[in-house]
Image (cartoon, rainbow, N blue to C red):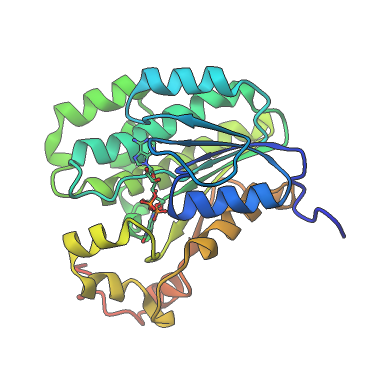
Length: 271
Ligand SMILES: NC(=O)c1ccc[n+]([C@@H]2O[C@H](COP(=O)([O-])OP(=O)(O)OC[C@H]3O[C@@H](n4cnc5c(N)ncnc54)[C@H](O)[C@@H]3O)[C@@H](O)[C@H]2O)c1
C-alpha cells in the first residue's frame, strides 16, 4: 500500500521546525511528500517548502504568518515550546499555551473538513484532570490578549511553575476544544512526551536536576529520541486516525501506565 499515512500533496504546518521534535516531524513530512510550511523563531535546516519566521508570543507576528500561509491547511503540528528557566514563567505560558492556541485558532478558518491539529504537551502537565475547574476559565479566554491579561493579573498561578502549568493548559484546551472543532471536520489531539533528548534537555536538567528527569523515564529507563516523538504526531494527524479526537496520548514508554498502577515512586517526582 503506497502513501499509507496519506500525506502526499497535503499542505501541512509545523511549528518548532528548527529543532528537536519539530525538525524531526518536518523532515518526516517532507519525506512523505507533503508541502511543509515550517514556523520557528530560529531558521531551520530542514528542506521545507516554505519557512516563516514567527514569534508565537507576538500576536502581530502570528497574524503575519497566518496571512502568508493562506489555505488550505490540512494538518497543523503545534510543537514549538519553551522549557521554563532560563525563560520567564510569563514567556513560557505565552509561547506554550497562549501563542500556540492563537495560531491554532487563527488557522481554523483555513482548515477544511478532514484536517487535524496535533499539539505537544508534556508529562510535566499530568494531573490536569482533577484541576480542570481551575484550568477551564483560562482555556476559555477569548484570545491571546485575554490570556496574557489573566497571567499578568495572577502571577502567583505561574510563579516557579510556568512550564508545568502551560502543559496542563494545553491538555485542558485539547480536551475542551476538540468537541466544538469536530463538527467542522477538524480533529484536535495532543501528545504527552516523556523525557526526550533535544536541545531543551540541558535546560530541564539545570532547572529540575537529572534525577527528576530520569524518574520520568519510567520503566524504559531511557530517554526518547525526537523521531520517536515525531512519528506518533504524524500518525495522529493522518486521515488514518479519523476516529481519534480530543485525547492526550502518552508517548512515554510505559511511564503513565506504571504511574497509575503504583509502580513509580511518586516521592521522587515531588508528588
Ligand atoms: N525535550 C523533552 O524532554 C520534552 C518533553 C515533553 C515535552 N516537550 C515539548 O516538546 C516540544 C518540542 O520541544 P523539543 O524538546 O523538540 O525542544 P527544542 O528546544 O529542540 O525545540 C523547541 C523549538 O521551539 C522553538 N520556539 C521556542 N520559542 C518559540 C517562539 N516564541 N516562537 C516560535 N518558535 C519557538 C525553538 O526555536 C525550537 O526550535 C515543546 O513544546 C516541549 O515543551 C519536550
